[in-house]
Amino acid sequence: MIRRTALPLLILVTLLACPAGQADSSDEWQIERNESRIELAPDIRMLIIDNRRGDIRLRRGDAGFLDLRAVHQHPGSPDSFPVWATTRRGRSLVLTAEPKNSDDPRARVDLVIRVPPDLALRLHSDHGDIETRRHDAPILARTDLGDLAIQSTASVDLLSRQGSIQAGLFGAPPKSGSRLRAPKGTIDLVVEAASSWRWNLRGCPMIQPATPNSRTDETSGTTCTRIRQGDRTAPLLRASAGGAVSLTELQQANRS
Image (tube, rainbow, N blue to C red; front, side, top):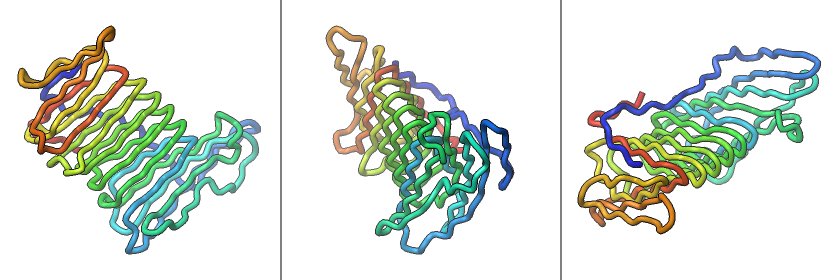
């Protein structure tokens, strides 16, 4: 259901607080850690991250730099195998990560990266979670088996095919609108009470109307409901979930 409350956004955060350059070794399993600072060319406008076998967690960083921490888990002996690489694609920087034993389903690379807040993001993982904090540029994020936890003041396009989505959308709605999809999971959405979105929300089970003036469409034979509400000229916020959709309005945004 859609629930309008005045509660602060709670996004669970997992921090990898591991010192750089250490490796925990055994005959069967390795955990190797690496930290790097990458200087960005002045004309880079977008960061593309493809980490199919692990998490992507982004923090607010310094202009002109990426501060990257990678934790590589794999079977076998210790190895200096490069788990990530960068390439240039026009005005975008592409960062790819892959574990050494990619044919072993247990092998993974988890990334924590500090990024400039004005850098547009395209993020992809097959088997990991994706999380951003306090970002001020457009975000496109896709994961197959993980969850998404996103905080943004710009437009977002989010898809979790098997998991759920938590999203905090702060500030004035961007003209391009935003879209959230979780066909197998739930969506928890937080916005500022003063924001002027146009809503198109669908959730299962029934979503309660946001106001008496909203339009509600029930899907025959199911517990799913779609709600449409708002000025037709306002930016459109679309959210569709296979499970429940909850909406929280904050009187004062907490972006910490």
